[in-house]
Image 1 (cartoon, helix red, strand yellow):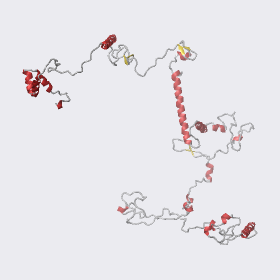
Image 2 (cartoon, rainbow, N blue to C red; image 1 turned 180 degrees about the vertical axis):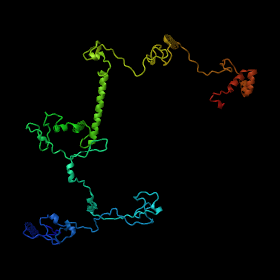
Image 3 (cartoon, helix red, strand yellow; image 1 turned 90 degrees about the horizontal axis):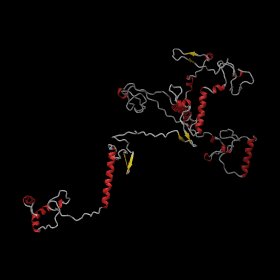
Image 4 (cartoon, rainbow, N blue to C red; image 1 turned 90 degrees about the vertical axis):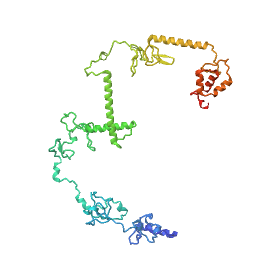
Length: 476
């Protein structure tokens, strides 16, 4: 029942109100009337009939359930498409420099950019657009048919087929003036009605089963008939041939790939599954070809004209091979020498062995001459004897040096004489003459050395002589 805002009621008033509502629901009392004089259904729940407190409704009403906030400014009009406004005869200041319209600028112009705009030519001024602004309500903004003109429906071509053309459904026309030939048109019927239904091909009770619900007959109704004369051979023939079989294999491959961990799903990503299946078939063919080539390379090809080995042709040979209990060859097959990618048995510089065939004292060499220098010339046996003699002589010198007891040389500084020899121990120099000789110049020293030589003067010359490799020569 529609009531006003809930006010305080006594227990007696509340009891009377409940009795009145029960009487109205039972039809014993007249229904409640709102402000407009309309009856209110007594079976409306109270949570729907009670008005909110902020409306301050003093009388029973259901206006709060209707659209009571209506705005008269909302409109349902729409834009006039293609309608143009005023068209000027000359360029106006502030209009578009390209077309001359006043409603937009050159940056927003939708016309083709002119080589010389209307601002400079003053010709072919475009008309102004009609700019309309509508304030739509909630429904108007979301109405997908807003602005639709029902009169435009009459121009829609429904591609209806005339009744006179219904008889030409099964007609097949040949192509004219085409190199491909073939036929045009479409046979629109699924089956010509003159054909015998599949369940009438064989009326034997024990023949192929026909399911009337799915209209399917899986087995062949005429298995003994001539295949060239049979038009229908059962639904299984269609399932096991053509594209149906390829689709079945594609599904099977997708299931197996998913079970093996591949992220593929036929229904979620059919293109990915088909591409994966194509790659699988290509890799399978490559592997099959590779295995075939390997077998042919190992056992040969009987279809070729090459002569087949006797052992392979007869399946036996005269070679005797012994095996142990583990399956290893004991006798009858020599060990194959492993080959290297480098050149083998290449001898250079008169050597008869290769480099690295001899090892001595942590050095590689040639075994033929026992030389440890690579790319050296081979000396043969003479070189070996010379090397041995040199080694023995070196060992003898080392032994003799270890056994000999030599005194260490004196570390005392030796005084050199004027002529570069050691100064005799009994030589006595006059100190006065030595001091006078030091005071003399270099030129006088040279004259003294040429005509007369005194021991003191030679010693003074030696002491004053400058050695160019002496690091202390600048401090003399």
